[in-house]
Amino acid sequence: MLLEIERKVKDQPYIAILIRAREAGGEITPSMVRRDLLVSLPLKACENLLYRLTDLGYFEEAGVKRERNLNGQYGQDGQEPVFRITDKGRESAQTKTFWQPEKGAYMVYKSKSPLITRLIGQSIIQITRHRSDKGEQRNTSDVLKQDLNKPIKVLNQEGHEEEIRIIGFEEKCLSYGQVDTILEIEVYKNEAVINIKPKENVEKSEDILGKFFTPLGEEEVRDALLAGKFGDSYDKHKNVVRTPFSPENLSWIRDVYIEKPVYEGVEFDRVRLEGVRFIPSDEEQARMWVEEWLLRNVDEYFWSDEEFQAYLHKKLGIILEFYPQLRGVTRKEMIDRLSKRQNSFYSISKLEAANYLSY
Image (cartoon, rainbow, N blue to C red; front, side, top):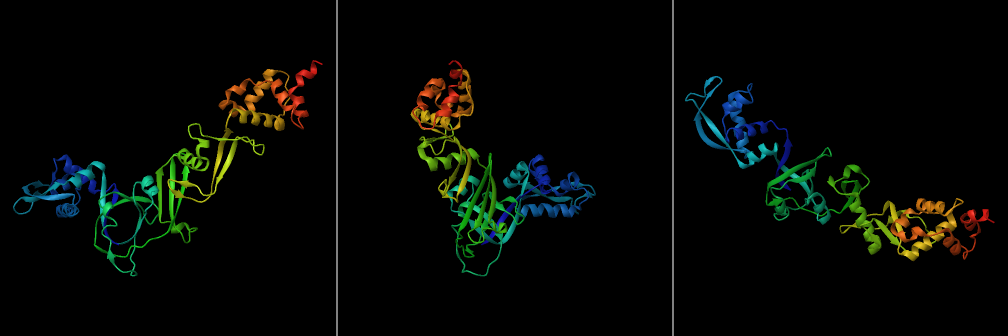
């Protein structure tokens, strides 16, 4: 597309001129620029500089005035032009940012994904200076209408994020085609990196169409993915998955694989979530879980009920946390339950160690 844009630039020397004009009540002259800011610059150059800023919309001409400069009177009649700061100039002076104009042909990538709009707040994801002779020209006046005069995050040629805003474009533009892309999100703690790649040659990092950094909580993404996979079985308030007892898996800390995770309506490739907590779905399931775990894993001899209780809290604390009624389970109760199971002799003998000494 043929666009006219403004690129956000920080620490521009022009900003000092805008700030000085604002401090002076909104008006400035070439001699003020030279006297207060650019002593080594010729007076005519200071005047040209203010006219340049006027062309860019930061000042407007406000007549002439008599002014004495460093070399005596200004011109033959002692008059010089006066420039009044505009709203655009006041904004730049206040924010200390300068919008550098640019005009040319650009390749524009615009995302339709509501996820991108929500995460980075913009629908434009990349604008690259480019010219193509292919494709017929057509009217695209509605394509960028909503993005005019709004700050837009883009990726420059060096791969760094910057801001631009579109201030106008011609009604006859280069053809605007659709490109299938792949979206990647890498989340760590409270920040995410978003990569947008073309569907072809996705392995080439240089083919990235857009790369953005955005605040996004890791727990927020985990909650959404786990809720999508386990539904109501996932308790997002306590960050656990409630699951029925299964003798095939007694681990309460597991890695979860999701083949086609969906986040904010966008489907991604297979992901692995590490360290997901699982707990029994109800009290009876919890008792079965504890019993099965002791049958298979008890690795100490207990000489008192107090030692047994301490062991339970150490090994099965996560279950007792959610089912505190099991904290009072006794050795005798577990011995009675295990005595009904096959291959339980050695587990029972460890629980009954104190009893053997009293025989």
